[in-house]
Amino acid sequence: MQKEFVDVLVIGAGPSGCVSAAFLQQNNVKVKVVEKTHFPRLVVGESLIPRVMDHFEAAGLLDCLQAMNFEKKWGARFIRGEQICVFDFSEKFSEGWDWTWQVPRADFDNAMAQELIRKGIDLEFGSEVIAVTFEGKKSITTIKDQDGNEKEIHANFIIDSSGYGRVLPRLLDLDAPSGLSPHSSIFTHVKEANRPQGQEGTMISFDILETEVWLWVIPFSNGNTSLGVVGPTDFINSLSENQNTKEALEKAISLSDYYVNRFGGVPFLFEPVKLENYSRSVKQMYGTGYALTGNSTEFLDPVFSSGVAFATESGMLAAKLYLKETAGELVNWETEYTAYMKSGINVFTTYVKEWYTGNLQTLFFHQPENLDVKRKICAVLAGYVWDEENPFVKKHENVIKNMAYILNMEAEKQKSPD
Image 1 (cartoon, rainbow, N blue to C red):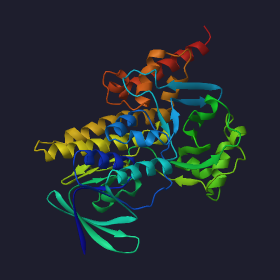
Image 2 (image 1 turned 90 degrees about the vertical axis):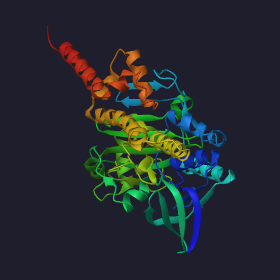
Image 3 (image 1 turned 60 degrees about the vertical axis):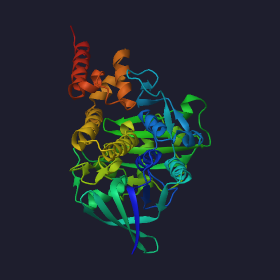
Image 4 (image 1 turned 135 degrees about the vertical axis):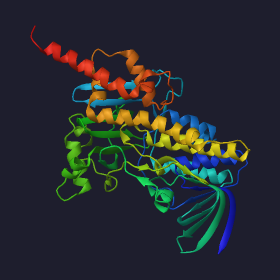
């Protein structure tokens, strides 16, 4: 059997894998990337948050992405009936990027993958990992190409950025149940022939149909728009008696007073894709000779677009810790990797849970706006979830529910007769 020898094997060429591989190659590490699919390929996760820009810049991938002229995302809009709340990333508590992108992921991921190839990184498409064995920190990974040919990749370390493929979690029995309640989504793209001019036509929006059900609208610079509905799995399944995804998404659009005229009856560019019970977790995020990054570890919920940010944060951190370890420094993966990533994931988990309880929506739509509170929440939505100077990060477990309780009590008092 053919054998290849590398320093680091990266599984998956999505954002996490590309950031890891590019950063390691910048630091003179021999990297090989193995990707099961062929690019470009359809994938969800089309709305980014500003924290990812730090990672693309550090990995030397920012210029190739800038050249793609993706739609700039300056903030996000949340709609509930006639109530509208807009977050502007330039008005946030924490220092950091004030904008990011809304991207068709097929083009976005392919741009990064091609840049890796241009940089001289060995990226092999159409090859699937079928087995992994470890001898101490060193590993032997067996991959099979589309013609059925197998070969071994001998590596000193593996970074598993396989996303929903979850290669090492499957092979090493690392999957664990998510702590979030089961939710599902259905999405597609449409071509907008009559897109509204200005901000209305380009701003990402989340239209709340019920407390736990919402529609996403993500306009792209190519004239297409991503449409998706998210909600409890039982609700998503109830949208179509025969589980027809086209019928289900059409029904969800019809429930949107805000968007039914813009998107009702607009033909879909592909059969809507359903992601059922999408939240994921693992028993551990690293082991001897490997680290899990991105959706290979945790996937929370698309409501605040945190997926790609956690993917690139973990991909960059895993690469940095590998470099530190190979330089002879002691690395405590439990504290420097797992605990660090978990602290940010826990903040976003709270926000996801409080979104679905309705408490966070109470804060979003309260009038008059509390601009100080809004700035602090905005920093979280921008991905700066490790900034403990922000009380909405440091005290995330209680601050949202406590404030919502006070606001709801005040609203009840105003309703009551004197």
